[in-house]
Image (tube, rainbow, N blue to C red; front, top):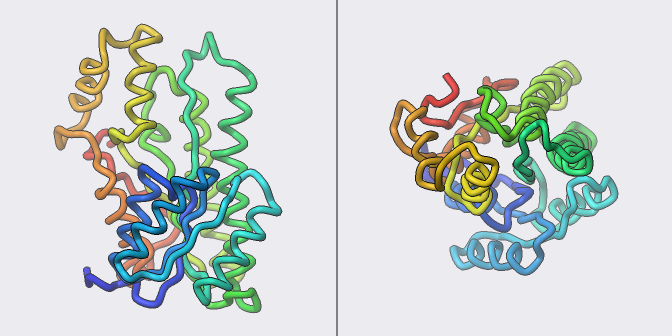
Length: 267
């Protein structure tokens, strides 16, 4: 793919302060896109935006709780005003709270549903409104929702998280159908990342040990690698490169798919 395959594009990346979100934002920036980092973590989010700005890329930060409709409206408005448009949404913000089904807390389940499901659909809602003809950006675009390999396999201790990421997959496909049928000019796809040694990924490994499913963290990570045909954990750059592809013109006839970036773990 071209090194500047996203030249002139304007992207909003949720959960862009760190981890997968920050890596995707950096990959989009390297491909030529302008970037709005959106996150609840203001200090870290501003640092992420500042790191991108050092590469002479137009960027800014907006505080966003993805469960809040009004904050979405403000974030999109700031993206359009600051970057001069809006045609890429990376719906990455999400949380994972590990628990065996026999020990699930209702408040934890509701929180994951609120962030991972409600947050994702609100992102699509406001992207569609902005990107469709007559919207404040109005030139169409691409939405990439971040699901998980957990949506495709039965991995113990993350039942609710897996359910929310399965919902992301279904909403992606419905969103793609609606956007296509209504002539919005917006493609909608999702990515299934494999386990990545980010803060969230390593917290899961530690939690697996705590609930008695592995002897130690090395054993927890080793079991994932053993299930992965390519023999390693995913890296954040793997996800960033996949997101660039799905947002690019090379993927112009691709919509409504879930792209596994998991080394074959979910096949």
